[in-house]
Length: 154
Image 1 (cartoon, rainbow, N blue to C red):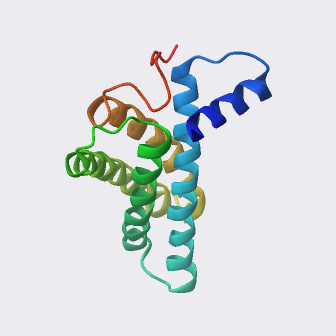
Image 2: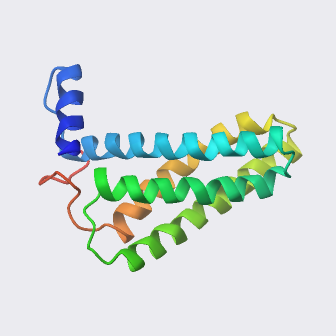
């Protein structure tokens, strides 16, 4: 299973056993990283090549990123209940909350502080990541994570 391979690799690199909660968070970061590359890459293409207004481009790139993120999370991070419509709906609602946070952060940093949009996006990613993980862990996938028995974070 891919989760076990990732967990074993992380433990081998670090040279010690790691709590399942941290391994789950690490796998979440991998999935989020892939989704972020999708999101940011599309944002860059839309704003710099097609000259789409950055707030609209951020919403479009978010939609692509969240689809990638949900798919990878159900494979690598969380145990799906099998109720995909319900899960995806809540996953998206939490993501929309994250999008709103992202848009506010972008607006503040770009419009008010005149910071480059791609740097502002990086700041938003770091802040919104925490919101997304803990909200999704609590409300979308409250059961034990994929590939884990001990779900404690510490």
